Image: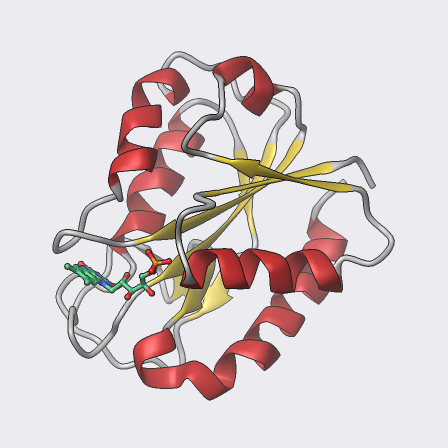
Length: 168
Ligand SMILES: Cc1cc2nc3c(=O)[nH]c(=O)nc-3n(C[C@H](O)[C@H](O)[C@H](O)COP(=O)(O)O)c2cc1C
């Protein structure tokens, strides 16, 4: 498998924790952790396999650091790239916007030609609306620390098993 770039903000607590968890589980795969707050387009494009960590903020919006990188992404040719997203959200507190950031970023990556992988079932979550839904699946891994913390380890392990077959 080609080297993976794992992009997230190093200044987050929960998103960083998940990133470290993911890194530990990918034992035989080369992986760089990259701070999305300082990443350049060139750096991002140097990976064919990417994992992006995106919490949803501001009632259904991307956090500032991802939002600021969007204009760069919109100029990229992502054909040949494989991208998996993991999102953090609060299905109770933000039931109308649960995990929207994953849908926003996923749509942008796809519109530039990327192949999205790592879709997961929305079963076991309770919410009203989510831009991250594609049919009955999330366009990535859904992590909810606020309400389902104890389910995170198993969800992450299962997702990584899946990515091992979906990344090239
Ligand atoms: C002000 C605020 C707005 C939020 N908005 C949303 C939202 O719209 N949708 C959602 O699913 N979660 C929302 N959340 C929950 C966060 O995504 C969740 O707490 C996440 O774990 C934060 O991760 P981070 O600390 O790594 O940034 C919000 C949290 C806060 C404090």
